Amino acid sequence: MSNTKLIIEERAANIGSFLVGRLLPFRQKRMVGPFIFIDHMGPVCLSDQDNLDVAMHPHIGLSTLTFLFEGAIVHRDSLGTEIEITPGAVNWMTAGKGVVHTERTPDRLRHSQKQLHGLQIWVALPKEEEQCEPTFAHFEADEIPSWNEDGVEFKLIAGKAFGKQSPVPVYSPLYFIEIKSEITKTVTIGEHLFGESALYILEGSITSDKNTYKEKQLLVANDSTLCSFEIKANSTIYIFGGDAFSEERFIEWNFVASDKKLIERAKEDWKNNRFPTVPNETIKIPLPEPSRFGG
Image (cartoon, rainbow, N blue to C red; front, side):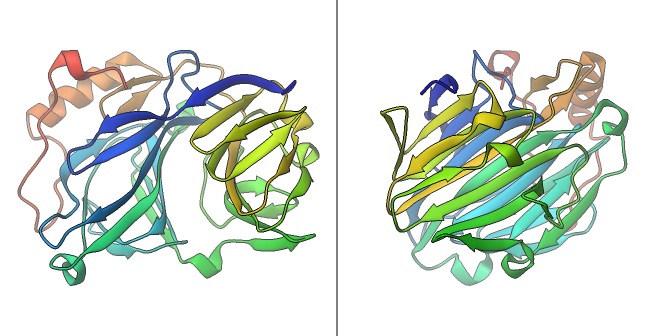
């Protein structure tokens, strides 16, 4: 594929309840545009005794985007938010100078067998917004722009592209696009993209320049404006990217910043209980040992 700069395979990472497939950061590519962290969560079948329970943990310098294919998660945060996210909806939490949240299986599902499958994404904030006040926004599936072109289904989950704009309140020029097709079709969309760009194959495959790429592969483009490929029948892919920042971003545990001093301060604040807490939550995840840092 002449427009492929790098091919990244999913790597397993343990988040406690189950393994996830980590896509970013990667040692040869730490970011794609403002996107700095992407986990493919599941698919997993959880028993009636097994639930997602991610206790209180902090973030700075980023926005989190949760997008589910199956299952449900209850999000609670230090802003007082409590909301259940279901497939196709978007949770967008901007940490700014500091926010704390939990992620748990809803009470209605805790004693039954359930599926969980989705993407969890971190988008780094521009330097001038890194210390902004934290915010939270939620959008139901029917609020996300969706359309069909010649039998191919498009969804603009976040950002701007194709002359459309998602309602998700992003802080820098970016796009996060879902493309699904039940038929084999050539897709040429480079004129709608900009900045750095990557293509993730969730299921199925694509072909470009006689090369075939399959699910769980992330393809980083040399030039986003040359994005053209053949999507095979019954495939789902995600394209994301945007303008890269001029400054480097550092990532340690759940913290992202352009200045390491901000990360060191956040670590000390978490250890010394100076972050806000989540109402009705008492358990916090401790700061990991230094050997576990590094994204």
